[in-house]
Length: 303
Image 1 (cartoon, rainbow, N blue to C red):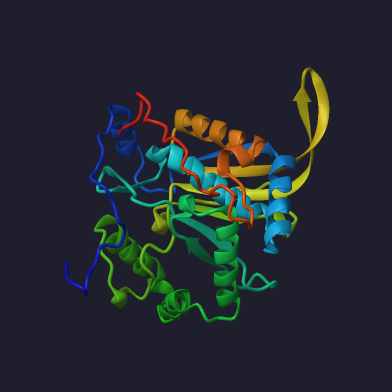
Image 2: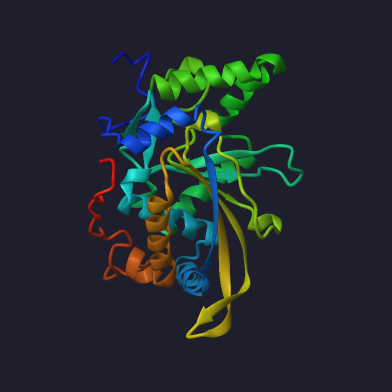
């Protein structure tokens, strides 16, 4: 392919579509229509201890956002049927798992940006934290050329033409899967899934909307870490927990897929060292990303 025009997203061949998926595709026209919402509280004590251990051994500041990003990436690796791009009525599995983190570059709320961690499933929470720190620093100092160029391009579009310009870009980049520097935006700028930390704003719960032009089917709003009641052996026990509010595209993610996704996330939250590995500076430490056995697609999967 010409160096001038390239593929926007690296995709595998289209997968088989079940009759239910065809009905869903015929029912909803835009990603803004089939939004489904769900909330789950995850016990956070093991995750926080895991992060504190990494921070103590590396000196790198860790947050629950880095943990959730890694946990979501690992969960998508084990359930690849949700890491898809819907284009021209067919599901195309993505070759990589890329996590988009929303970033507020200023405290006034006048601007909103984001950064993508590519191949996040192959990186540790520590590596995600280091890469995010570097990228967020560039965003706040306005030295991130790719996103700065995208914002500059949009600032030049008249308000009345903004919708058409965004839709045209989305059509070229995702429906046609073509990208060129002339579009004025980075290649595949939103990745597989979006994560926003609303807890950092003091919010407990909120649902972020799907962004139609991004073609991302999963958006997670990460709430604050607080003590919440849990039931253990018939007793109400207060535990530190983190609330995850999800918005997903029902054409790609249904209740069965969401249920399996949550079960895997719970396993990771309950025992992060077993599920994700751990980080130590010495040479004897195991690889933080030691490969887990890939779960075979289930019978109801479209793969």
